[in-house]
Image 1 (cartoon, rainbow, N blue to C red):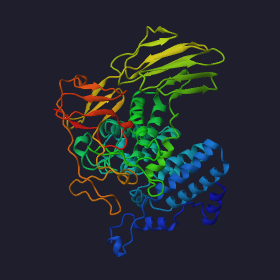
Image 2: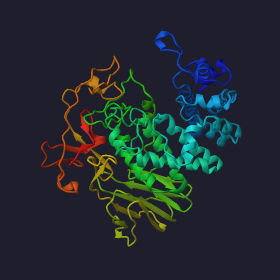
Image 3: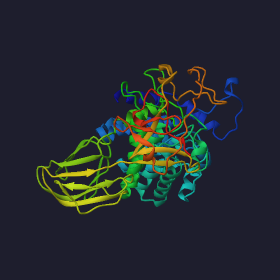
Image 4: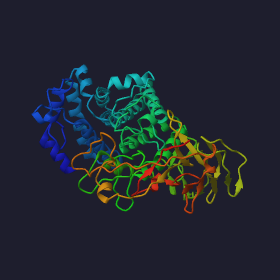
Length: 524
């Protein structure tokens, strides 16, 4: 931190970055101007996402202050905020809006965080200048005009809108975040919860089947990181359990499946292109945006298991963990091997009795209300899937709550192509094992996405040569219930189709590595 402060002092004006301020001069000069020619002929080009990088630095410094109490970090990030305020404030509003058409991310979020932390409205006003009106205004009117936009530069803008609402109470920004989340989750997300295709939204809403094969690079990991972050904000406003139905699905299927267990390498995209395989960063040749957010996300696995309000505790995720709620004098241990084990147990470990409500999330993927026991006795009360079961009592050391979480097979079809289907077991998305023939380490470690021959697809010259696409099996369903033709295999959470022309083994996508797979199938 001390060395960064020295760099900032040397650069002057509060600016801090590894690249020079000249990039922002060029951004200012060229934004809104027509191209004058290709860069290889010497034509000047817009710099690539300088404010995105500045936001990353500012966000890291703010976290050093807010999480670790580093006062020097606060001083340095306030210097950066002052520079960003003066730079944006010197531009006419119309021109600043043109500048915001370049990928710039969530710098406004950090400015709003600073405003709240320092009680300085200057930073909130600066954040408002980094609000892209042509993106926010349609959302405020509940209009989906997301087609053609770059996903991961816009989700952080909505996080900033959520933060703007939290510090100001302005319902317009509440509505922006609320509608955006609903539209992305319900109309622009794949079965894993991931969103984006080729880093953008290339189609109108609910056209996921049509877009699936447009690009191998589906479901960018940064987008999932930011959607989970946005979800935490929205859940904090009203405690609606649907937010954690989404959060659980995307955490189990996308986030937990995008790190290579032996190495810790992470992915850029979780490709859902049929016949794809997982690709990971290397140690020194590929450090992507999603490598950075991957590191952040895997430091947050204990985040959001438990929440509270003035009346008690919410248990939202089924993860082995210990809770120490110091203000309440309440301690809890969650014992589970979910999802391999279809239940969870909560054991109170408080030194003194505590009167409060404990609310258990009843997942929407359950078929019916689950069995819940307190100290071995079944509760008479119940709650429907997609809600909370509230248990109010005086909790004593040794009290034990047990909840069954029975899982079943389900089908989830593309909204525009009902014959394009994915299979889930409880909250787990199942991927079909299509073998590893022809895959090499160079094809898995280093590329940001699988390289598969498909028409006019042209990989970069330094990338491994593309390999031919393989034939994906098609299925004929034996009735509406997938359990009639998808049977448990000899390994936990693993299944195998039966009676098909070519039967396939299915397992949770978060467990599939080093193999081709498919999540979506053509089913008649």
